[in-house]
Length: 264
Image 1 (cartoon, rainbow, N blue to C red):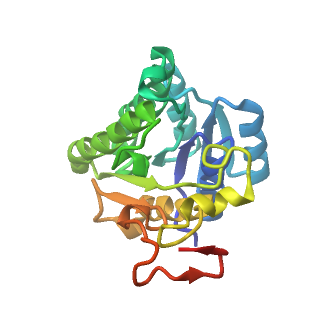
Image 2: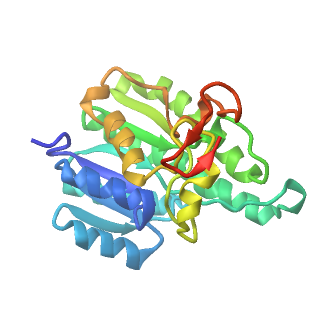
C-alpha cells in the first residue's frame, strides 16, 4: 500500500519543476492529486502524464475564488488530507532597484498565496478528520541574501505563518510544517540548466552540488505522511548543508575534492 492511498492532495505550482515532481511522487504513493498552477498547458500535460489519479485546476494562488474552486474540486474526488503550498516566484534586484509592483508580485504569490491556501483548506481538512499542510519556504527564509529583498521577505513570512497555523490548527488534527530548500535544479534555481551551475556555486557547502526536486519531494512527503504524526510547527532544511556553514579553503578538512574537480 502507498503512504497516501485513499487521500486527496493539492499541490500548487505543479505545472513544472519541483511542484510537478512532488505531484508525481504523491501519485506514486497512491494519492489522488489535484495539480494547481497558472501554466495551464504545462499543468494539464503533467496531470495527463500521471494518469487517472490526477486532476489539473487553474489556480492563481493570490486569488480567493481560485482557491475555493481548487478545494471544492479536491473534495469532490475524495477526502482532502494534504495541502502543499509550493507555488513561488522570484524577482532578484537590489533594494534600490526593486519596483513596488515587482515586490508586491512576489509577496502576493509566495506569501498571500500560502495564507489563502491555509485559510481556505483548513475547514475541509478539519471536517475530514485532520491532515497536513506543508509550506515551501527557503533557506532565504532563515537568513539574508543580497538581491532577494522580496523573496526573502515572503519566505520569512511563510516560516512565521507556518508556526502560527500549527498553533491554531493542531486542535483540529491538522499539522503544519515548512520545508526550506537550498538551491534546486529547476527553472527557478538553474534557469539556463547549465551543468557548471549544478556544482560551482555549491563547492564550499558540505554536499557540493545543487539539490534535485525529488530530494525536496521526499521531505515534503515525509512531513505530509503519518510517519510525521507528532511533528508540527517545525522547519525541515534540505540544503546540502548550506546553513551548516562554509567549508574554508586551506583549513583541515578542506583538501581537494576530485569528484567535483575543484580545489578547496
